[in-house]
Length: 189
Image (cartoon, rainbow, N blue to C red; front, side, top):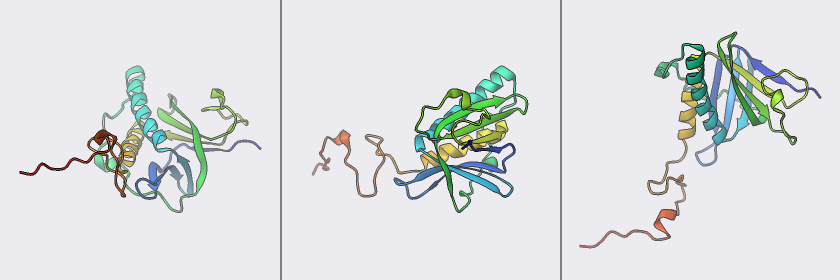
């Protein structure tokens, strides 16, 4: 069966979002354009890496190609609305690709479905019939920066971190390795 490539050249929205409670969240990227919407499932770390790499790519594009890239995103440009429901997973993301399309002056984000076989790099950002299903989104530098800003916030909006070991705190409590199994008791006067 030939692969399906969902292409969004001018998406109305491309956002990172979650479903579930902190500590038990599922992470999604969702692209929508008019009546068409595609949601893909991925790991928290993948969202974080994508956000970071978009920032790096934008700096490189500005330096090498002289493209106008905003250093930050104005607050009113960051999409803060939730994922559109129902969130129906098209596929789980395995491989991610990122590039610059000089012709359209756009950042290109490509997300490939998990496969059992090794993914050949040549299928990333290519329209070959063989390979995993994909979601390909074209974003202006401004929209890419806004996506990265929101993605960082989504990743950071999880559980609070322990001030001693920086591991996430659970609602049931936390055994901190920095306290070595002991609890500090305030000294009595």
